Length: 376
Ligand SMILES: *Cc1c(COP(=O)(O)O)cnc(C)c1O
Figure 1: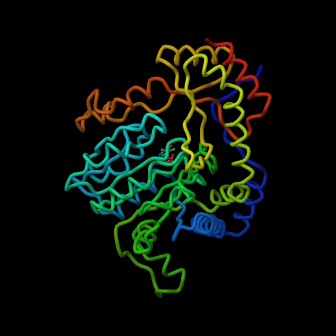
Figure 2: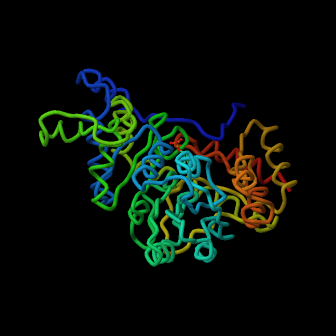
Figure 3: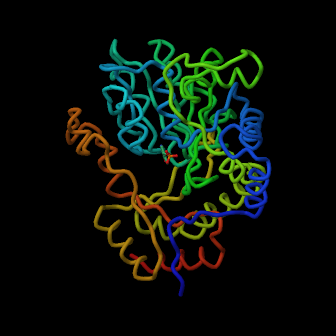
C-alpha cells in the first residue's frame, strides 16, 4: 500500500502552460502580466481596494507591520495558537507580542478576552481565521474602532471563506494570504497583502518595490523613479504568479473538491467520534468556511499520540498543529508562562489534523477512515 501523506502540492494542468507563457513574455521578474491578473482577480472577487502579491504570507505580514509603523515597544495582540510568522513579522520590527487565548469552539482569538489586553501601547490586533473559519469580526472590529487600533487579518487559511456573508480578508486595515505549498491555492512559496483602506496603497507599493516609486513610474505618473521611503523586495517572480493564476482561475473547482473531502470525513467519522468523545471542527452557522483542514480534537494527549502512531503504522500521515507561542523559547522571553492561555495549552495537546490535499482520492479517504475507525 502506498503512503498517504499529510499534504501534497498539486498542479491542475494549466500551471505549466502559463509558466511557459510568462517566460515567452520575456518578463519573468515581478509585476508582469500574470501578477496583474492575480491582483485583478483577487480585487474583483473579494472586493478589496488593492491586492499585492508577495513572496510569502510572512512578508505580507511584515509589510503590514511597516505600513503601520510598528516600532520598539508597540504592543500587538496575537493569538498564542498560530504560526510563528503571525508574531515574528511584528516582533522583527520591535513589537512586544501580547498573547490572547482562543475560543474553545472555533479555536479563534477569543474576542471576550481581547479588551482587557488593550493598553495605550497597543498598535494592532492580528486575528487568525483558524482552519479558514471566521473569527468574531463584529466584536473584534468594534473593539479595534473604539480604541483606535488597527486590525491585520492573518487569512493564510481562509481565502474565500466568509463571515456573515462577507469575505474573510475584507474586514481589517490589511489582510494577508499565503500561497505556500500546503495552503488551498499554492505556487510553492507566495502570498498576498490585501489592503482595505486606500490611504495605504501608495506606500504599500513603494515598500514592496525596495522603497522606490517604481510602480508610479511604470504607470507614467512620474518620469523617473527614485528612492522615496524604506522598503524591501517583496515581489514574487511572474513565473510563480503564472502558477498561482492557473489555480485561482479554477478556484471553484478546488474549493468544491476540498468541501467534498471535509464532508467525507465528517460523514464517515461522525458516529465513531461521538462514541469516543472526539470532537470535530465547529463552524458557526453565520460562517462559510474555506475548507482548509479537517481536525479531530481527541480526549487526551495520550490518545492523540496513539492515533498518530496507529495511522503511521498503516502508512498514513496525520499531524498535530501549533505549539502555544507564549510557551515557546521566544514566547517565554516575552514573559509567557504556563496558564496564560489555558484553552490554547489544552487544545494544542489534543488536536490532530487528517490528510487533506486537493489530489486526495476517494479510495485514499476510504482508507484513512477505515484505519481511524479501527482505533479506540
Ligand atoms: C502558512 C501560514 C503563515 C505563513 O505563510 P508563508 O506564506 O509560508 O509565509 C502565516 N500564518 C498562518 C496562520 C499560516 O498558516
